[in-house]
Length: 122
Image (cartoon, rainbow, N blue to C red; front, side, top):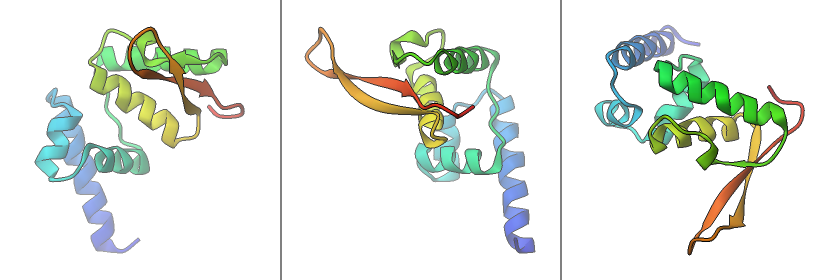
């Protein structure tokens, strides 16, 4: 990695951590950086610098439990945090190959995603 790329990486991590520790949402950070939430998520994963609030960490731990259980689940099983956080955590698990997504009929007029753990991932 070039010196410039390493400096950019270091600065990104420092700014991201500073903003998250100041309780700024991922959506607000993405807007501040002028990137999409998906791009922010990719960078955070690549650099291994995710910062979660206590409530987000509890939701992340619960997601880990659901994945380790090995049974299909829906996003509705994660609560206590905003929907955007739930989908951030699920999106991260999808990108890491820990789960896969499918659609299931619900009692409502739309189809809800069902997430199935993928064996061998942690």
